[in-house]
Amino acid sequence: MEALQPSEDAPPPADGRSVTAIKRLVIRLAIFSVLWIVIAGIDPSSWIIGLPTVLFASWSSLRLSIDRPDNARLKLSGVIRFLPYFVIESVRGGIDVATRVLRPRVKIEPGFLRYQPRLANPSARVVFLDSISLLPGTLSADLRDGMIEVHALDASADLKPGLLRLERLVGRLFGETLDEARA
Image (tube, rainbow, N blue to C red):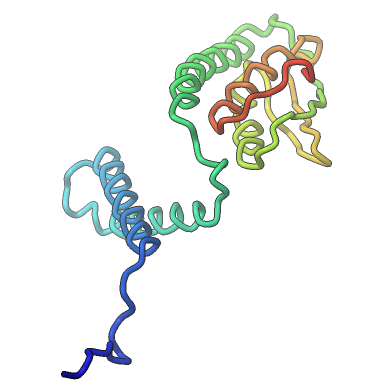
């Protein structure tokens, strides 16, 4: 009896990586489809724009997550700690800016502060840089040579405690524990 040999034009057997990639794609398609329904409603005609949008968002998300080091993944415990902080600081920041606009007597002394982040993970640094704007009256303006330049509406205010707390929370998102002695 002759042994069966795979034909030359048969697809290669699925390995664990391709199955994982398909699962990741399906999950992303489901998430972005649900988000599209939340945004656009259940009108089938919305899928004229929604389908390409969902496909592009899923593809982009998958491409951006490829070849990330394992330590760049978010930690659930960090997310649970960060979400309330994110919501509270977003509201506080909005109230602060609205107060400064509606009450012109509120102190405005714009300026810059340089801050040396202690985060080792590049993904954590990006999230930290983007999250600085959550702090009332602040905006990350530049990142050069490992230093972040923070624009503040009131440069005389002590921003360092808020930046340290934010950095610790972002570090926990990625499983980093920051050395308090270096603060």
